[in-house]
Length: 337
Ligand code: BYC
Image (cartoon, rainbow, N blue to C red; front, side, top):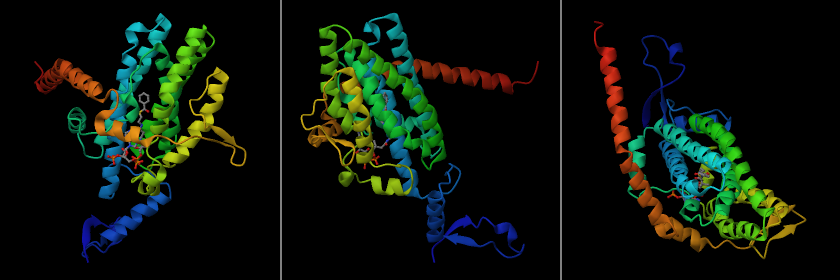
């Protein structure tokens, strides 16, 4: 039998001269699955299957990259925000996103991958980030649409992640979700102001909805039948709801909001189904999603170029922080004079 080196947890009960029993791998896997089924949290210093660890590193690092690259489309409007109040709120939102990226990189680091490694993968173009951040922000209304729709979709996707089986990710998500809800409200309020403004402002809001609606629906990931990771991630309680279930929840929450704004969802097939109490949408063009994932979205190259520039421009900050830490360490180690 193939046995692991992991010792049985109740080894203290073993007679002192008898070697403690060891757990076979199938047993260890079964115990892990049972713990997850009982909704116990898994912590970084505990044994976990390699595939569970890899799945989390993949998902959390992609999520962290999304927060960091997601600062770019909005950063584009910081210098052109229409009022001081709008500018302050947008600046705070973008800073929150940097913070979310940091919590998430830190959560991924507990799984044994370094932040440098993750960053290198992103800058080499070898890591994924959310498809939604490869679209341009053409008008101020796009800032409203991002807050309302992109952050709205993010909350829908992320609330269940607060109950993720991996402790550090679940705890990071609780704080992130609180901040996302402020982001969503500031976006909706921009849309409301535009929709109650001049006809030109309302047209700008409608144009933003027209361009962001379908890409936002794609944010939830491929349909369940074409989602290779969903089944296992749901069994492990990393994901609690499927991509399609979350997409549907988002549509049902957002259609009434669009109506309140007096805007039209750009889907001629959108219809309310009395039997299910849900809004039915038309077909999503998944070829667009695949093109964006393959690096051929409207802004993929620009986003990567900007991420590399920002990383290079920040080199002196990293060097200064390291030099400062070294100076403090040396001072603390020096004998008192
Ligand atoms: N974009 O089997 P699936 C934010 C990939 S940040 C790109 O369903 P999974 C915000 C997927 O990675 C928004 N790729 O995968 C920030 C996989 O590829 P690999 C990000 C996508 O992981 C600033 C393949 O397709 N949120 O909210 O079970 C401002 C097969 O998919 C996308 C998160 O990351 C996509 N949209 O489910 C405002 C949340 N969708 O890795 C807002 C955490 C799928 O096999 N992540 N792919 O090469 C998740 O919940 C899940 O990872 C996903 C995908 C639902 C995204």
